[in-house]
Image 1 (cartoon, helix red, strand yellow):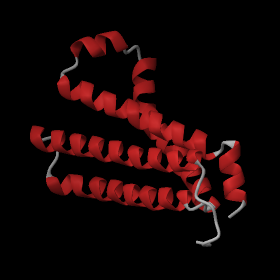
Image 2: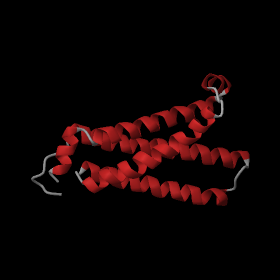
Image 3: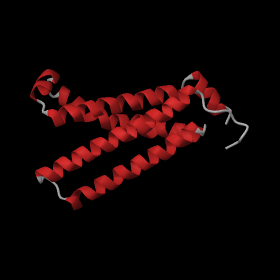
Image 4: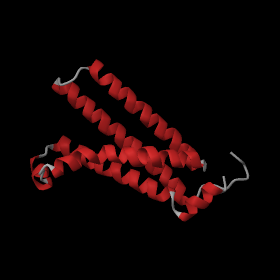
Length: 150
């Protein structure tokens, strides 16, 4: 990084922090899902290992890219927006959207949910908000100027 370069503007710093928050929420959700399946006996540790390994790789990649975004590396911004911003968002919303389209009721789901389901849903909502917020902030005018100066 060029030592003469200015610090990232607040929108870029906040976007990077939101990506890190999204990773934290994703990791929390992964631990909850894997733990539940292991506890219920619906999967073995060896069956969950590839999924856990894949998620770990995605999380590590997202952290790496978020730190590069903070440094003003436009390729990292475009990579995050294109991969996790688009495909990651789809992976977060596709199952709830299918469920709603099949006639699911949010009020009935909330009424019948236990503590773990509510915690998971809350985490998923915050996860999605962090991703959408990060993508939005990465393309604000001050962020665009910062990335162009790199």
